[in-house]
Image (cartoon, one colour):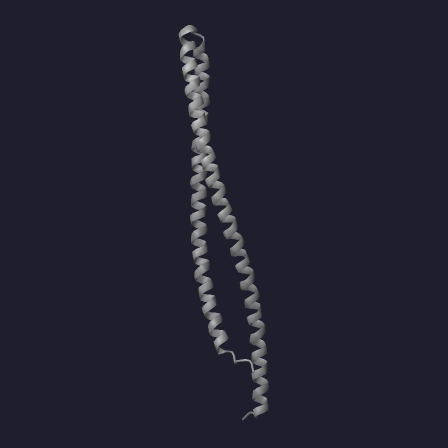
Length: 149
């Protein structure tokens, strides 16, 4: 049977071992928390940027619509006077088709961004669950540690 002094020495060594492990875990959790805070800030900025971009595009589309309405009126008047304007109208239609293609691409990009945000949200949910498990584990470890004198 080990003496009282031997048991105290073993206990002190065990506490020393766990203390370095807990310090390492604390350090890693602090780093992970920093990463999560940074990612959250980036996500919020991206959401704001997308919102501003969407509002700007809506304004531009309204202005473009008004502008195109004005052009169409002028082209109708010129078409009555000049038969050669027909070639110009075909050119404008081609440009509008290209704009439709571009708008389709923008819609696809916005959908891709939305999908990316959804994946990020799921990832954050998994991270939250993992941190909850880690916090529970740390709480259990801390409860098992002897109280400081």
